[in-house]
Image 1 (cartoon, helix red, strand yellow):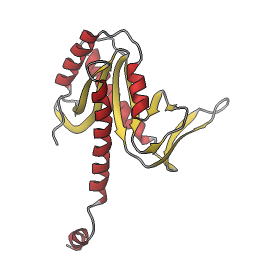
Image 2 (cartoon, rainbow, N blue to C red):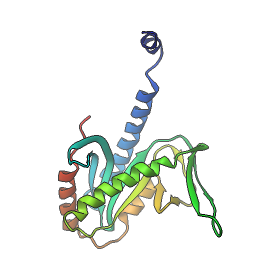
Image 3 (cartoon, rainbow, N blue to C red):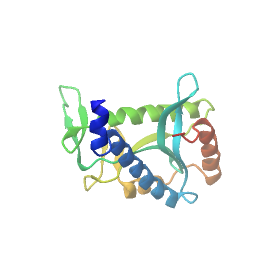
Length: 193
């Protein structure tokens, strides 16, 4: 009862603010992708993931873009502050890379993205589609390094950097892109909120 009273007397809960902030970031990235749609990419926004038994999950993939250079799984993030990749180790010890935003370790963002990439890769492997699938973290409102950055092979970009990645040349013709997007739309239907 006291928790309800406190909630009633304060602003919206933190989880609601964080969700709304994330949704704004997804919409901003989606708008950038729509600028490229048709000409450079086929775009699928806010797609439901599946559980191991095939049923739909509440988890989602923010965006899937089928470009000439392959399929990109895009996780939109809205974090305030400076982004940096800290690297340690090397010659005599294992190499480690950690992602920090505003001084806080956010390496866990890669785990979520890697699971999404694995889902899309498995869906394409099931129909013997030999198409490269890559993940990218696209940040809105985050201070990114001037010369670009990546961690464990995952590009860390803003919306303009994302557009550059998706416009790169590749082997997928427009009709191939449409066919792949149609298949992925069936495998990953629009998420239900």
